[in-house]
Image (cartoon, rainbow, N blue to C red; front, side):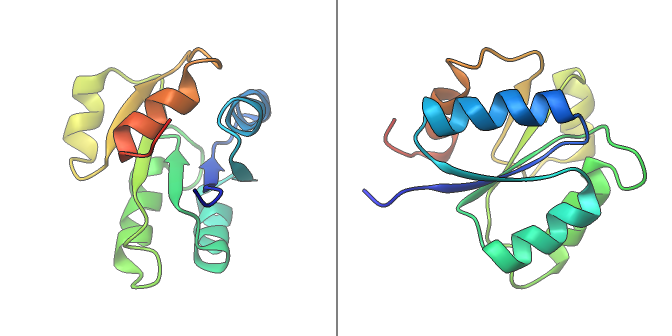
Length: 124
């Protein structure tokens, strides 16, 4: 199986670091990160990852606005998006209904790659 490439968009450096290590070490995926929605949009367009893990609550451009931009761009709208958020699931359902899945923070770093793989239909 080809190595999966994942883009992680989260404004919290500690979350990015833990999730990136988890996805690289446990999931054995290539991971790039972005510290903001605007940076994530640029990276998604240039890197063309297999999936995007997106935080909802971020300053300036939140996850909802970032997702709308990704969906409006023909070169990124095909990339599946998973939300990783501390918000209650009901609140995220109202924000974005077309995402592949919503995963909760705090997350278990050992389980995170499996949860993402299951949501995307990737072999774990």
